[in-house]
Length: 320
Length: 320
Image 1: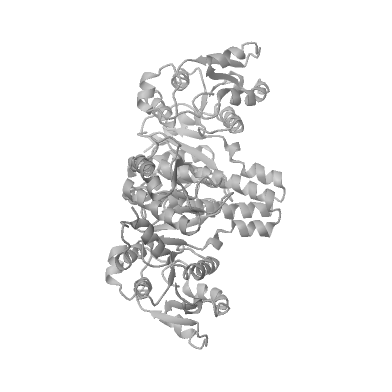
Image 2 (image 1 turned 135 degrees about the horizontal axis):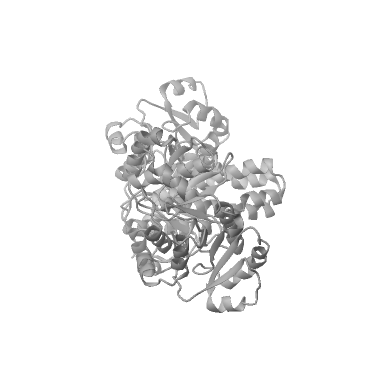
């Protein structure tokens, strides 16, 4: 298909940012995209009317009467609100009148509607895949929030979707990892332990390499091409990276010196975690802790051992 | 107690870094700590023997015969290996012969042993608390990996432990948040929804402010003093921050220009996540997406809409 005939739907409704703010900030950029694609903008009737005068053949508007809010029950919302931007957008995708659809609306409603209207064979649960930068190539993290309580079989399905995605991007033999909190096969939930076995068995047939459990810190080393996870942890990972990224950019403004920034960022300096709820000062370091991390943990112990934290906690918990 | 009489146990066994590497890297620093505390080092018999000549009254060694490996079943390990460094360390804490204990060993075994030997009233599940830097004060993240499948009541307990910890640090009215994947009270697992209600109800009695659900990206803004989570997501959050930190330091070496680094780090540029497993190109942005994030998502749609990813995935999933 000629790129000029491509039509992309942009849902300005249903997220937290007001649609007028989004539109006023993207409109000039969209006007400059003439010849690359055409766009259908979903907005309130009022907002659509205010852009009526805009004479750009590649930009059109779809006034929407029904809004699915972020706090709505997804299934009820998609059953009742057939004229919401989400429902219309997905219908137009199905009718091939749109070739792409972008939304920041209710995730649950989006996934449920897409699953019903645009089902794909061999897929029980559609999943969200995000690409993240690493020290090497981009890694595909799947799922980042569509599914929060899942089975081993569903994790396997995510691995297949992620593997297919990276093959499509040109990686012939993707390396697949399972997000876990330790490298040992016995770590994590039952679903993770079972998925570990299943992925070992089917890797060859599906044309990928299963590298086993991966901890979140290894991700940015570029240890895998696809990292498989249920959506809660995947969402936490993605948003931590985003938040930390903004934190670092902030630090850079105030710590122009590399060594100071290094000190600020060096997590090894934090050493370990306190084990709370026991009658004693116990500091747990990561199993892969460096000597530097140990030093920081020992420094923590020197500082905290004269204080009586367990006694304070005991009294605090007992009150009321 | 006089600081000089404080004794800290350091378990060099059971982690992934060889004990001799750890010891050779920390020994000079420990020697310099004379007068601040004394240290009991848990190591293999061989390693202890090789340091026999060391004449430092504040440094002593505990040769250990039994090792709890990282891949061992925690409960079996602590029942059978009474002479492991973990078991001895916790016993000495109980007998008040140690005033702090540091280990990078098997988390499950550590938590189980500490719970049995050093129980604290009103605590069902001891939890690991890590302090992380933010744009404001340090935030206490609890739990970072001791408990991976938990109830609402246990989340409430973690909130109490975290609140007590921050009060001990001097924050009189800690702000407590619940780690979730959206700000709405209906988000997340059943346990999270229920914990949300419980924390709203008991905040006043326990002397903290419950600010509701917090997404991982908000953490580094300093939105809360305590972030409560089950251990899997908490562990992922902590390790993502660590891994990302190392990634950034690496980038700084190769991108000395601030604007280039900004571009590399700017997650907004990644725009959105692909919804895979449906017959259509759908890109989902965060609900809080900025106009810049929308632009990136639209750019993604322009690039990806001419390709036929769904068709490729369908064929890949159907094969074999």
